[in-house]
Length: 427
Image (cartoon, rainbow, N blue to C red; front, side):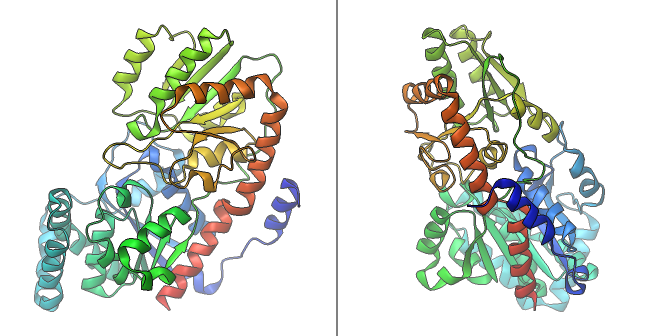
């Protein structure tokens, strides 16, 4: 097997130069919110496409106005096509399509209404998106967009479908997690209308095929989210530091941070000297703060809040292990394959996670990491203590994890696959 360095060297020598076809190929991206700190995989995918010579225009449904913004997102923010809920230009775009393509315009209202019956959230959101999507369609035609790609199979893909119906611009979408696990309204229609569908895991591909029909299986392509393996490199932690646990992810139920905090309580009771840093923010923060206070863990568990990528890298350089005890919530929410596990593995930091959705496709138990049952803080504590007691095990898992990421989860390689799919769809 090639070493990490040999794989990087081969990749460096084989970087695709932007061809004439790519240089003149323009893709539009739509997503729910931009820039969103917990969805950096969208940002870095767009950057990687640009680096391969593909023009990218950004059409977010909502301006996130985030308190923390990655430096790399700022150029996209400055030229993103943000729109209010309603405006005179939106009204003019809708009248334009009503006048020039009345059957398509009225038909898409009926299609979304019919497809979302029985799901108030999808219906209200879907119908509310149509006026804004019509303005997107008008602007994409003016800009010469060749292909439209949506991230998440719910409302962003409704917008992509509307643009396609009004203009004929081909579209595709990436299905991640909650967008297909919780509510599958209109999923079949979206798959059938799209040129291709990206599933981030085999788990997702099977779920999409189940709902869209087995005859759609060939249209569903597995393209993993990826990480920049040149940036996320192996690091050498200083000797003698405390055993350091890091968890990166928005503070929400499906990430399972409450079980990590409980595992930390058990580790403290056992006398392990350690510290645990939770990077991210979200709705669960008040409950997690109360749990830390109640269990007297403020000396070992720290909530760091949302942090830009350079600070995440610094924290990974201090980490002995990254833990992400993901669960499936009662409403059906769960992870896809978290980038927050790919990044530490690319740095040769061992990971501990759970047997949930597509995670075992990245974290092979005992090979590229350790897996425990979801909602089991005792098993989680045992796995963390095992790594604390056996640094050589962590080193072996981390090295194997980086090899896995280089083979299957490299951002440049996977974005090149996506670019070829997009160019093929538009030809």
